[in-house]
Image (cartoon, rainbow, N blue to C red):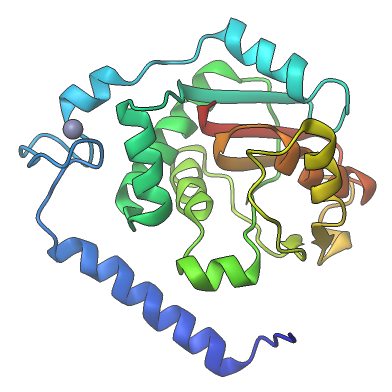
Length: 241
Ligand SMILES: [Zn+2]
């Protein structure tokens, strides 16, 4: 199938974005975690659910880095906020920002992530933020990329711009979670392609994702960026599985 970015596609995309964004303003204010009504002082997640979230400590972040990233050498450092636990609030929240159009929640979590980065990763220097891209087909199925909304929150806090003009997902991949490590790496081969090489050459980047699960998607993106002259790749996610 051949896709072309015609004016019509762009228009439909922007209209649906406006509708999505405005629809949320008319919905009753309910917690993204437990769907209870929010009180006036609660933003998008109720205080009970916020208290349920377990922060990831530095030892766990280091362990994740050692297990998923160190051997490849594409990613310089990672940071994450919460431990992803099945059956807990965090799973419901991540699910809702991925499939339930909870854009405000995604942005709010991005702001928390941005604050976490400023407090815990002062040494990170990067020129722009790149949300992990979705393939066009998945993007049109889902209608949005949740990582882009998270990245918007990170941008609000850090003041660093988002750049979606550098890398795109060129291969539609099956879900990775049931595959073995080598299969996952094979599956991600040639999944991403560079759009504008001149924009990445010599630059450091912050990649933003919702959850770091196996690291194979992030390593594939970082691999392509490094091969095209990136200086350093940092990675931040809302949750760590
Ligand atoms: Zn709640």
